[in-house]
Length: 118
Length: 109
Image (tube, rainbow over all chains, first blue to last red; front, side):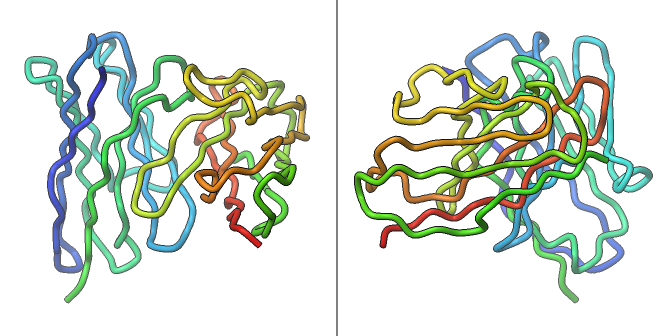
């Protein structure tokens, strides 16, 4: 069984950074890509970017270009998403999601709430 | 970016009713469309991929159809556990970003 376990909730000040982790277990890490999708409370889903660890390939949504860094540590089967220059509008639940095929999210982490507040 | 729209934004139906949700893409995405179910406080769950293929373990009352720009998601007989928000999502190859529809909230009348 595949599990994606994310790090805990965060409270951050505007202008700071947050780094969220997502550890994968139960299946081959290198054979998949992993995306980050966020959801502002009460709103819809927004794709931020993805990493394919085996190729070290990263694709980011233009909206987050320059503010988001997605990395992976193959030794621990963990992917990370760091978001910089936080603003109140970044308050959201951040999900990691695995793709067994391009664009198809078959497993999701439990979500990490990030609150940006002064 | 490919824009996705869904209708209705919400609906109320009785248990046993047939429920239909439509999703429209701003350009041709072939059959590169997925449907997800999300319950409050939970991550989304993949139900349908490639517009019409049922994910393993998903009940057969869920189905999807369509291609190009117009897609339909159907619950043939609404069950209490189907109360959730449903999202479509496109993944046209090499056309980033991946985008979701705004969601359709389904509840019981």
